[in-house]
Length: 327
Image (cartoon, rainbow, N blue to C red; front, side, top):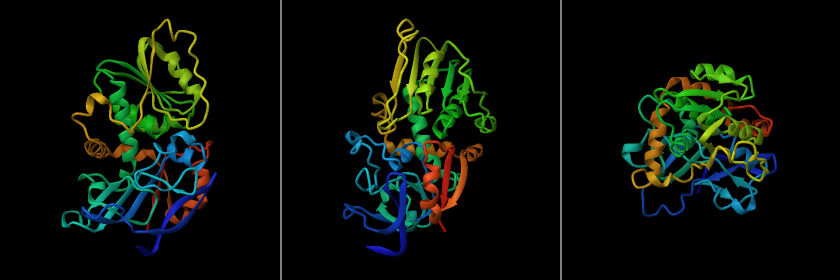
């Protein structure tokens, strides 16, 4: 079923995208209620979406990299995205007119099972809720990192996820936090979030280092800041890019732990108590903090997305979360 004027953004080739007519089909929904959603905002992810847009997803990871409501197949053409905030136009009465978050691509209208949308909590503006998927990644990363009261913690790489991780760590009593990024322009937003900022990996003997720069050099800096028996948690995903890791120097004498973290799986120790739905609800609650509006670095109209995507998703790009507005 199509709706007149309904369009979605598709990646059509390496560094190329276009708007295509979109359907309102909802496969597999015959046995449960569905909702029709009008998109208000979507968020462009500088991390994963950049790898998809630039054809850097390894073939061996095509299946695991599928977004929940992706259409098409990697490498392209593919409709990809997972940060959509909209308003329910049709569905169960308790959801009608409600602002909701859904892991849906960039599309004007869509239909999904009612269980796939989460109502925004009171006090969370829809425009800020596009950060929900990034906040989930930050939460999961800290579950893997296990920071403790009083820890000396460094966060290396201040993209959206790194900034959210550092902002969460700052709220743990007694922690000595250092937020590190070679990009001096990050100083202003770090200040707005109350984060101690530096461009140099100057700290040593950290209890915990969290890396989120997506660069080999950043990982090397993270390793250099870790103290004996410390943990380094890797939040970056490099796609098919090779990564050089300096595992000489003090890595073995200091018995360092290098641990990966990935939002697609809740840490095993939490799985008996935490569902993905509960984690998303927590992420949305945390986003009620007004200072997090600083993570929205720009906004464009949906119709402009094919034109601006190559700039936003360029490996050399400097955007944080770019918000797409739908009229």
